[in-house]
Image (cartoon, rainbow, N blue to C red; front, side):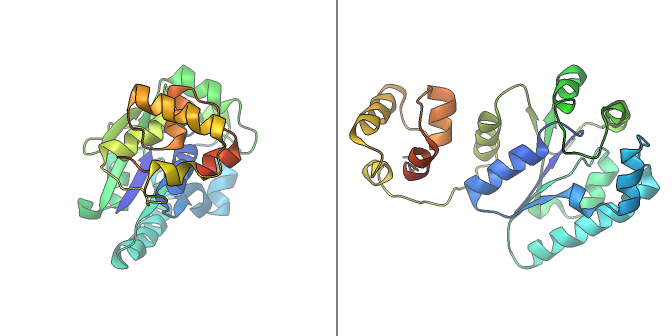
Length: 222
């Protein structure tokens, strides 16, 4: 299966893609890495790309995804794919591909855009991306006005994806966490019911866990 996260620049595609990759154990690809130097220079100069700039880029991405499909492997791609024709170019055969469009309003994404310091695209191009953006007709649409952990969990649940099973029981998942923490987790579990991951527990239930504790307390969903 291939998951393609779409939408305008600055909507969190890469962040969500990396979280999905970590949760599912699938490779993550960022479409920005497949742009030519000419495309990057053009965008860095606040010049919007046109279709002629994008078609070869989309074809490179489609070829890469096809390699995964032919090998029966899964992968996650973060790609703007603003137009329906671009999505069709990426995935002419939808049997193996799921599109997930991350949506948010202009002001929200602009505020996030301005916080970025490590990306070649300037905020001036965001308007042009919204102008090109077309609705996702055959895919999952997720609002980004929530935390990355919650968005990731929503995608996993709505696409019925399976996480690798790191442990088989709650007791195995809590080994090495410490008695006080273990009691706290069990208490929340009894109060709120099963949870799919420690990230969900931390984000939704409010239990504070260190990175080490999170890594040790990977708990299988009942």
